[in-house]
Image 1 (tube, helix red, strand yellow):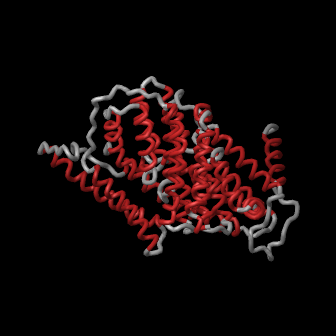
Image 2 (cartoon, rainbow, N blue to C red; image 1 turned 60 degrees about the horizontal axis):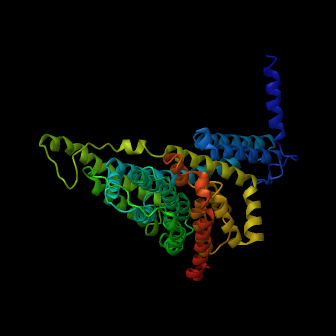
Image 3 (cartoon, rainbow, N blue to C red; image 1 turned 30 degrees about the horizontal axis):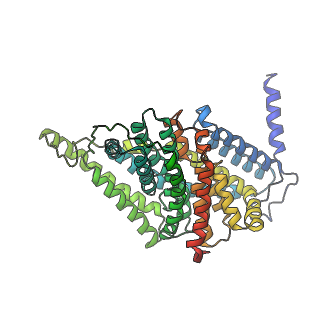
Length: 473
């Protein structure tokens, strides 16, 4: 009891310190109160910064990144709600704000869950393994494989996410690279840059582009105006790194892997799901997530067909060399293998940034960046920040600020947030994942060595966007 009492006093003191210096009357308050100069505001910022330090240290601590931000989100909103009640402010204001954040999160989470389920289903049907085996058995030299894996990463990531794409291409590089660490390092850097660049010109390529599209700020087809700037972002560093790739030919492998039954149908259903989501949004004016969930039903029904017909085919000894052997399919296995840590991390980020916005910090940041600096400088800075801090909170903060900008400027921030993460290996999910997959061969400092070249591509992509999309500004 002697120990418990001082602890309780300390906690009570912290809670009292979070009160704003001046209590406000309830009757005239209809909008959130600016609490940027209050103790609760400073406390919330400190909690978020501390949580993000743990996120950035995930590689060393092996603490999943979702854990600190989810805890931080609860602490921040708990502190806000307690402050409002203690000062006689309307408690429905923070309640309505967090409900709004939850709705935004739910739409994006369900959208991503469907996309991840399709990608995992294709992985379960060995689509990616079959592609990897063909590349490994191709007999191409290191320089040819450097370009092939980069180009494939650039064109696969707009449909699949950049993380899955990078892991697939890295598996190819590790299989053919063997003990040639120089090739593996440069090829992994090229894959990270290509996957991030490819995700920037498609609404499905990255969470940041998806957020902008679902917010209704940029039309689906408008994103493809970033194709050439994104290609420039990938090609310039690749062209320079090409000369550092060993001009050798690895030993080819005779490994062959067949896709499982129904693989091609699942690929077609995924494309049909994308068409459904775009149609629901463009023609029916419904949230794209409704179209994606409808597309999940396509996969569920096809999975039911696969399960019902597998037994008959096995009994008859049926084997079609075009579609592989009949293996049972369970839709809930791909759902279970979704990147739940990423999805929960996304919740924590949305809630934390939403809390800081409710306190007034995003209004201050918007005034500084988009009014004083101007949108161009601000949007280029966003790209630099995304190399250090994950692009998800950075983009969500920009969307919450919702500055008045032209379509050209919104496309600019989409581009910079997407490709800016390539500047450092820790700047994107693809880079962090590859550091784990190619541990000891693709490293932070190995990537850092080529940062000036990647930065050249970053600057060139921005200049290209201003040049070819001048009419959008």
